[in-house]
Amino acid sequence: MTERLPHEKGFHVSWDQIHRDSRALAWRLDGAGPDGNAGDKGGGWRAVVAITRGGMAPAMIVARELDIRTVDTISVKSYDHQTRSKAHVLKAPDAEMMGDGTGILVVDDLVDSGKTLELVREMYPKAHFATVYAKPKGRPQVDTYITEVSQDTWIFFPWDMAMQYVPPYRGTD
Image (tube, rainbow, N blue to C red):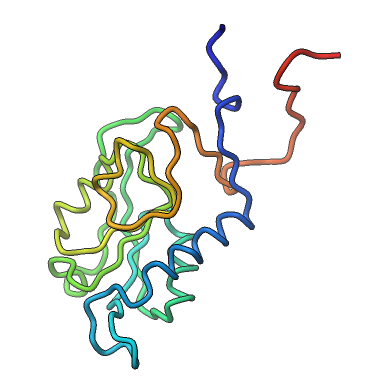
């Protein structure tokens, strides 16, 4: 059997699906934070920090669902197009807000190797790390996630895609 092309072992995520899965993530996180001042339920979060760029859409949805008004970003570069490289921080969130991460919810779309989250976790060891999707190698770096996919699956997110023809999986007519 020949090796498959990336789109042949791909997990295609639509805008509707990322929205549903991000809402599911919010529901799982509801009441799980350390803040006792989050209404009757308690367990609120002080802020959401999105890991850019992929974590921005899920973080926005989670912040909306959980009524978290303080949202910031951390920019970590760990890919050059589709090639993984050493992770490094390009932009950090407000240091005073972050502290050691207590009460902070860090959101990303996917944990793959775990290198990005490992770097951010070193900076904010008491933050809670949540992703919509998780691969086995990176799963130990995540506190909460919704869907696990195999390590060799490439996830195609809607912000990376355009509508175009794709040939059939097997053969042609």
